Length: 69
Image (cartoon, rainbow, N blue to C red; front, top):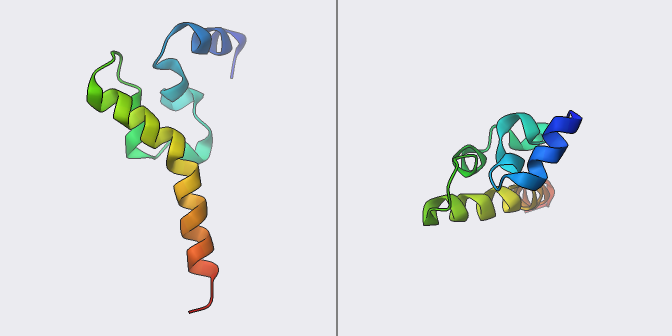
């Protein structure tokens, strides 16, 4: 991430959710793609929350797969 990207993250609300600013494990997350949409519509706000929670969901799913049945 360049210095310009880091500065932009602080200035624009959708910048942290843009594909090139996301960590690799979140880049294919559908909610993060919607979250990168400019604006403050309810569906965009909801997608930003889901994008932030995506790593937690994936970690829970991995733990559940590894647990004995």
